[in-house]
Image (tube, rainbow, N blue to C red; front, side, top):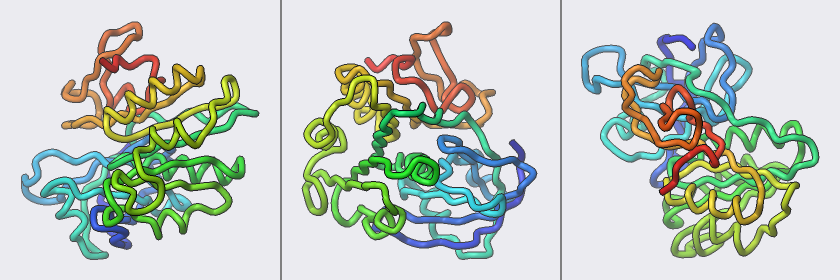
Length: 260
């Protein structure tokens, strides 16, 4: 992990809510893995005072890092309005990564809302080394759905899209899709999820009923990103009753998280 000045190489609007941004990457920082994140802020001034965390969605040959940003507030909007050539301070890679599935297991990837970035990165890594992987992405409506972008990365792995109102793809949530379209395979499946807390709590319930492991990348407000401020703590069932999402996560075995 290191801090460095990064330059925006490309900025593409992929739906009403999402932008695909590509930044220069300092090879001295190491190689980010699916599940890890970076933090960004302006190089000058104190607005915003704190860096904002964004999951890594892709990494190209040690020279560029890709981030998928959902516009959720003033800072994310300002980053998405940047022009190529603009610079920011970046720190990363931060946090831990998704464990790779063991042989002879079938990965099922679930993503919703701002959680699509780490799942896209994991999907790309798995399809590169294992072949087809099942991935399900959920959005509010057709306008917010980056359907063309998801189709462009699909390759040989099946990518399914869900929308709450059925404007495109499956009508319902990713959990509805999982329950109705992906049969359980106890002992053979492994699930990965990132998205809003209710979605991941429901994914945990499904994983328990299916008797398959689930790995989750937790979404939490982060201030420092390095475990110092204790601002992103969640309750856990582990040896310690609390865990810092930025330092101890963001990836956790779902059985370690207190969901209620």
